[in-house]
Length: 100
Image 1 (cartoon, helix red, strand yellow):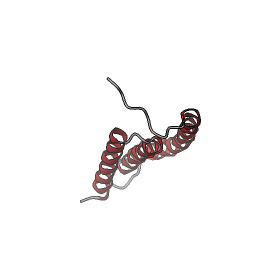
Image 2 (cartoon, one colour):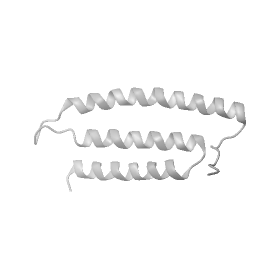
Image 3 (cartoon, helix red, strand yellow):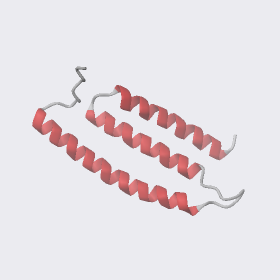
């Protein structure tokens, strides 16, 4: 098994765990963490598949991952601020269930 295949397999596993967490968890903080885990899986997959040839590495996906990390940090801060405001207004830590 090559290193890229191993990293791709790990990225797929992380993405599966993150999607499971997004679907099953109603707690706001756990959903934000699951979304961050999904982003990390995508970053890992992009870095694992960044090849031009047998020995050359493509720098463009690495630059995209660095930019994505910066965006993910700011989006996480915004999501945490929204969750804190939601908790302050409603007192709930979980999302309401759909009645339909």
